Length: 358
Image (cartoon, rainbow, N blue to C red; front, side, top):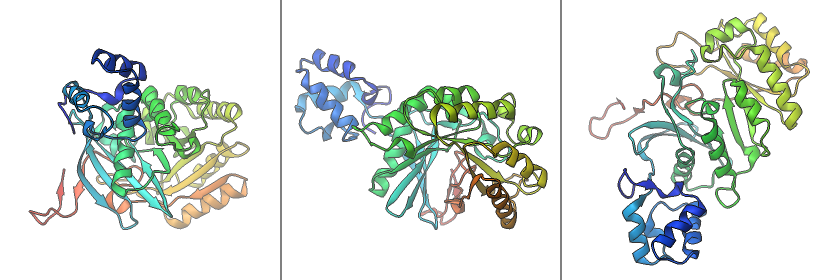
């Protein structure tokens, strides 16, 4: 990180603010465009890298502004090639981020909040509550960190890490647009996916935007009592209202939302649950992603048997519902869905020679 943590991050300045800044420093207006290009197109994180700026200007900028680039506290590598990072921001708050390489593509799972207030029973993040929401730049910085570590272009981003994106709607939207910006990372809108627990006002706002970003909904049960137990933070957004909001979404956008369904042994994998899920999905535009629950320490919930997951898929497909059994990435390093928790197990400490938890 360059400069004092009390200094403002220069990346937060608009073009107009940069123009006014260079004017007050006695520089011609075109310098603002140069600074903007270094920041947002070339993604530099040091004033020293802005080589076409006068040395005096670079010094003046560094005296007042900084780059609040997150610090990597720890990282782990999965057997499947995924990498999980514990990143700390300028105020000491940390989040987890996951990079997932596959066939010359690189997907990144980012966090939108440090912690989460939704309290989902199957999710490690919710066990520790909410610390704070992240800024759009902090979300973008997670993507940039992964890109730099892999030395590859990021091809897709899923907002499925820690936090509820629609509880931080404004900053989430700003991050999506930064990632999609053709003068920035230029990631296609359909390769940017936001996952919500079912915050209905957020879904309705999301249906009105012009960009074709992708929507995923953490469903996990189509029976109200079960869903209330699993996802207490969205009790007030009933399944009936959620179904209506999703129908409105597909009618307005023509886009197909996906439903995330983590299958939990004896909880949401019964015949009654399957019947309810078929009823919820049948005749609508949607895609169901089934996944065996990922184990979370200190949780009594266990994953469904693989054959039960397959039976759900067959029944849904029989009723015309597009369904995929999704393989977990990085579950051996607690990097899969529901496992991110702001605590990090370093597999081998170089000094102690043993496991250590941060």
